[in-house]
Amino acid sequence: METDCVKHVKHYHLCQVYANQIRAPPNELHPMTAPWPFSMWGMDVIGHINPKASNGYLFILVAIDYFTKWIETTTLASVTAKAVACFLKHDIIAWYRVPATLVLDKAKNLNNKLIDELCAQFKIQHRNSSPYHPQMNGARMARAFNKKVRPYEFSPGDLILRKVLHIASYSRGKFAYKYDGPFIVKEVFDGGAIILNDMDRNENMLSVNADALKKYYP
Image (cartoon, rainbow, N blue to C red; front, side, top):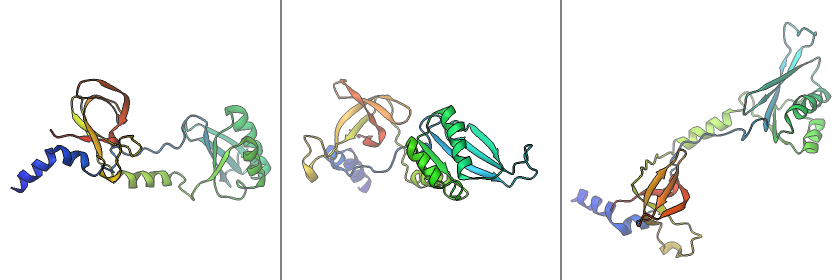
């Protein structure tokens, strides 16, 4: 009897459209540190180095583009604010355009008034990396997010319901339907975008993300 009740509720139209909305994400999180090449650079210092560089210098200033992983370096006798600012201006900005973001280690020779003034002059967003593992924050966030993932698998021809937005003109507050439909899945794209048809096979021109859909049981 319990199985019959569960089956009846699962297929009952009003139970489906009034059911609580699904909050679990349908896809894993893939944090993107930089949206395009040379928009975000990280800088750090290596040294003292042993043996010394061919010119006798003891430090290497390294800059890496987060998107392409392209590296620019220079050797320094000492890591001064002026030397770092000169490297940023002539080796990064002059060659690769003004970056949107600059990520620096928390060392004082990389975080100083001269660097702040240079970032302000070129409207560069200045960030500090966390100690030792500057990319771990993104990885940790992705792991926590991915634990909540509940994959949705839709195929062309599936019947689905679509979330009703609170801003919809036909919304009636807490007594409104949580979902409308059913609709028919016309096409499924990578990344979760889906094109829908209504029940008369008329195409909905706007794609819908999978996190706004759930399967409908007639």
